[in-house]
Length: 135
Image (tube, rainbow, N blue to C red; front, top):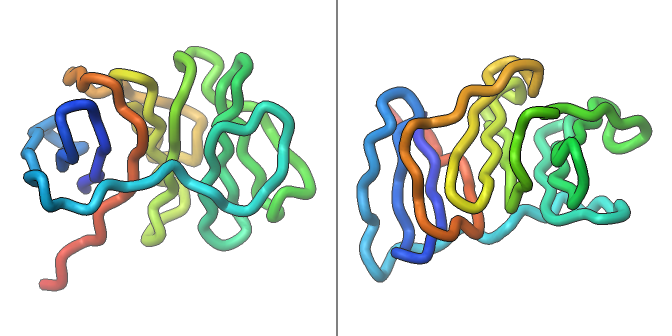
Protein backbone atom coordinates (compact mmCIF):
# COMPACT_ATOMS: atom_id res chain seq x y z
CA UNK A 1 0.00 0.00 0.00
CA UNK A 2 1.39 3.34 -1.03
CA UNK A 3 0.60 7.02 -0.60
CA UNK A 4 1.63 10.13 -2.52
CA UNK A 5 2.85 12.95 -0.26
CA UNK A 6 3.41 16.63 -1.03
CA UNK A 7 6.42 17.91 0.94
CA UNK A 8 8.92 20.77 0.97
CA UNK A 9 11.31 18.56 -1.03
CA UNK A 10 8.70 17.73 -3.68
CA UNK A 11 6.25 14.91 -4.24
CA UNK A 12 7.24 11.51 -2.89
CA UNK A 13 5.72 8.05 -2.86
CA UNK A 14 5.83 6.25 0.49
CA UNK A 15 5.32 2.51 0.91
CA UNK A 16 3.28 2.08 4.09
CA UNK A 17 4.50 -1.47 4.69
CA UNK A 18 8.27 -0.92 4.62
CA UNK A 19 8.56 2.90 4.84
CA UNK A 20 10.47 3.17 1.55
CA UNK A 21 10.42 6.67 0.07
CA UNK A 22 10.81 7.42 -3.65
CA UNK A 23 10.96 10.87 -5.22
CA UNK A 24 8.45 11.29 -8.04
CA UNK A 25 10.36 14.16 -9.65
CA UNK A 26 9.47 17.73 -10.44
CA UNK A 27 6.78 16.83 -12.99
CA UNK A 28 4.75 14.68 -10.55
CA UNK A 29 1.25 15.84 -9.73
CA UNK A 30 1.10 16.85 -6.07
CA UNK A 31 -1.89 15.82 -3.99
CA UNK A 32 -4.01 18.64 -2.59
CA UNK A 33 -5.46 18.72 0.94
CA UNK A 34 -8.74 16.80 0.91
CA UNK A 35 -12.14 18.46 0.64
CA UNK A 36 -15.10 16.13 1.13
CA UNK A 37 -17.52 19.04 1.05
CA UNK A 38 -18.26 19.13 4.77
CA UNK A 39 -18.46 22.35 6.74
CA UNK A 40 -17.16 22.06 10.29
CA UNK A 41 -15.64 24.51 12.76
CA UNK A 42 -11.82 24.40 12.74
CA UNK A 43 -11.75 22.14 9.64
CA UNK A 44 -8.33 21.71 8.02
CA UNK A 45 -9.01 18.89 5.51
CA UNK A 46 -11.45 16.05 4.91
CA UNK A 47 -11.83 12.89 2.82
CA UNK A 48 -14.77 10.67 1.96
CA UNK A 49 -15.35 7.07 0.90
CA UNK A 50 -19.00 6.03 0.71
CA UNK A 51 -20.72 7.12 3.91
CA UNK A 52 -17.43 7.46 5.86
CA UNK A 53 -15.88 10.91 6.21
CA UNK A 54 -12.59 11.62 7.95
CA UNK A 55 -11.93 15.23 8.98
CA UNK A 56 -8.73 16.82 10.28
CA UNK A 57 -9.56 19.62 12.71
CA UNK A 58 -7.46 22.24 14.53
CA UNK A 59 -8.08 20.86 18.03
CA UNK A 60 -7.33 17.84 20.23
CA UNK A 61 -7.88 15.15 19.16
CA UNK A 62 -7.07 16.26 15.64
CA UNK A 63 -9.28 13.77 13.82
CA UNK A 64 -13.00 13.05 13.71
CA UNK A 65 -14.83 10.36 11.74
CA UNK A 66 -18.42 10.06 10.58
CA UNK A 67 -19.89 6.80 9.31
CA UNK A 68 -23.21 8.38 8.28
CA UNK A 69 -22.14 11.11 5.82
CA UNK A 70 -21.63 13.70 8.56
CA UNK A 71 -24.82 13.30 10.63
CA UNK A 72 -22.83 12.17 13.68
CA UNK A 73 -19.11 12.31 14.49
CA UNK A 74 -16.70 10.48 16.79
CA UNK A 75 -13.30 11.68 17.94
CA UNK A 76 -10.29 9.48 17.14
CA UNK A 77 -6.54 9.75 17.39
CA UNK A 78 -6.17 11.28 20.83
CA UNK A 79 -2.42 10.54 20.71
CA UNK A 80 -1.89 12.03 17.25
CA UNK A 81 -0.09 15.37 16.74
CA UNK A 82 -1.66 18.34 14.93
CA UNK A 83 -2.61 17.31 11.42
CA UNK A 84 -2.44 18.74 7.92
CA UNK A 85 -4.37 16.14 5.90
CA UNK A 86 -5.92 12.67 5.89
CA UNK A 87 -7.23 10.25 3.29
CA UNK A 88 -9.36 7.10 3.17
CA UNK A 89 -8.56 4.17 0.91
CA UNK A 90 -11.21 3.78 -1.78
CA UNK A 91 -10.50 0.01 -1.73
CA UNK A 92 -11.06 -0.38 2.03
CA UNK A 93 -12.55 2.49 4.07
CA UNK A 94 -11.01 1.05 7.25
CA UNK A 95 -7.58 2.02 5.88
CA UNK A 96 -6.91 5.65 6.81
CA UNK A 97 -3.74 7.74 6.54
CA UNK A 98 -3.14 10.89 8.58
CA UNK A 99 -0.32 13.37 7.97
CA UNK A 100 1.17 15.71 10.52
CA UNK A 101 3.77 18.29 9.51
CA UNK A 102 6.53 15.67 9.36
CA UNK A 103 5.09 12.17 9.95
CA UNK A 104 2.64 9.75 8.41
CA UNK A 105 0.30 7.73 10.60
CA UNK A 106 -1.69 4.70 9.43
CA UNK A 107 -4.83 3.03 10.77
CA UNK A 108 -6.06 -0.22 9.29
CA UNK A 109 -9.16 -0.41 11.51
CA UNK A 110 -11.07 2.80 10.88
CA UNK A 111 -9.09 4.99 13.25
CA UNK A 112 -9.18 2.81 16.37
CA UNK A 113 -5.43 2.14 16.46
CA UNK A 114 -2.66 4.16 14.79
CA UNK A 115 0.93 3.37 13.78
CA UNK A 116 3.46 6.09 12.96
CA UNK A 117 5.92 5.37 10.18
CA UNK A 118 9.57 5.64 11.21
CA UNK A 119 10.41 8.12 8.44
CA UNK A 120 10.16 11.88 8.80
CA UNK A 121 9.46 14.17 5.86
CA UNK A 122 9.90 17.96 5.80
CA UNK A 123 6.79 20.15 5.76
CA UNK A 124 4.07 17.77 4.59
CA UNK A 125 1.16 19.67 3.06
CA UNK A 126 -1.03 16.86 1.64
CA UNK A 127 -1.37 13.08 1.41
CA UNK A 128 -3.36 10.77 -0.89
CA UNK A 129 -3.62 7.03 -1.45
CA UNK A 130 -1.96 5.78 -4.61
CA UNK A 131 -4.21 3.55 -6.69
CA UNK A 132 -3.24 -0.10 -6.59
CA UNK A 133 -1.55 -1.10 -9.89
CA UNK A 134 -3.54 -3.39 -12.16
CA UNK A 135 -2.07 -6.88 -12.13
